[in-house]
Length: 489
Image (cartoon, rainbow, N blue to C red):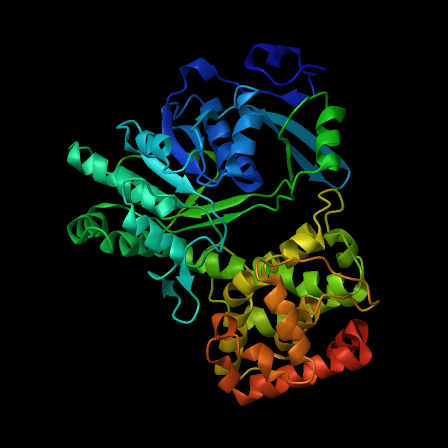
């Protein structure tokens, strides 16, 4: 079995789909920062499909990163001509393809000189990014960009050699402006509400600390389209690498994913864009409707199943969905509490979308882990769960299930499951979270005092009393009993 190389694609088994275009004819047009599994199973696959139609060959991807850890991905892909495999897994079916839409990957180094040069190049029309939900320097108490973050202040002090993605974008835009070149479009592909606006706030907010005139130019001239992206893509481990080998592919960086994928975007690309509508991307001026649906139902749904599963010692998502209590918990919360507060979405039936989510979560072949879904709750809860609680209560509804879920998160962060087994650190702030969860066991208000998560929700008596009651119930009777009572209510 040979390692993936362009010259050896013809020797792969016939069961593996390979690029149906001449990669030597591709020209870079998109710089993507953050080439993790999701990007490589999503945006890169859409472009691979488009290139196979003979379209958009001047929009090939150049990978990039701003963290030292990104070098590992660059090294893995460099060894195989930037090729990698994507394996779609469904119940009773799997399919493998080699994706060829990436043609280069910038060097990773402090100061980001290579990345800035690539973005500043006139051929770059789009800079896209997936830097995780927590990578936008948002002040959780205000929901806006935080200019006081140490990394932001460091870039403001050294704007010509920035170490954040936003500092690098600003410097590249400055060079484009000085050269008289049209600015590129900045396209966020992270699961962040109003992600284009959030990205714009980060770029302009940081630039205001350095150059007010340039900040005003960026605000007036640079496009930041909002988008909604979706595809369940687990982390790669030994199982995933073995799946690639079973297909006859020797791959340093295979990706596995579900068959489903969705991409909804605003059509705001002044410098030009690939014709992605030809491969299933939806362009609309109502991205916010799709985004709210997905964040409240899918991302919120992940949390609803993950924390009880973690406390019950269930490691895999499909096993959690096979548990009647957890599946019932998910469907009841979505049906009774979440769907009533989700605005109508063009062309979508919300109950059908709910059923699709339940089916996707139940896919036994993806083998996604509940631990992955539990990770970084301090960033995810205020985006995916707390807004739903606030909206239900504001509408005069009953948010008992969502409040119970919030209490389950607190119990999870105590650091042991219901069987008393240790839960390994699973949040960037894990030590602080476990200490706070321990305090909340006797004083539940301690948990709600995290204004970075709950804002002023602690002042809502219905929420505070419901949370205290739910947490006491979990500690007294356990996760299964607490969920059973909710389902019987």
